[in-house]
Length: 139
Image (cartoon, rainbow, N blue to C red):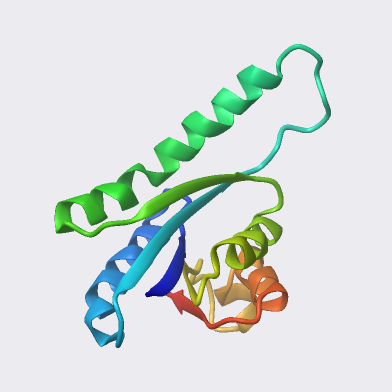
């Protein structure tokens, strides 16, 4: 089984990455195990007594960000697993790559310009530095 991690933030770019991955799924020699990941940024500081509420907000925001990508896969009858992480996006991605034995990452770019620094968002650049597996950037 070839494990693919698709980063999802609810944006059109992320949905394009999901659609591209679905179109290219037949090119893989083995069946795909698809993992969707949304990473939520933690709230600054610690406030006593609201930990559960903060977890619920992160969960709800993550589910909302994953909704359109999940609908694309559900409508196509594609099986997947989804995850909601909390922390620095690139570090959380690197953790999931190790933890889940991911073989490839698929993610959208911001596509704002011709230079590499403008084409790729900062998360994409950080992910490229932290992982040692192929990263497919979809514009």
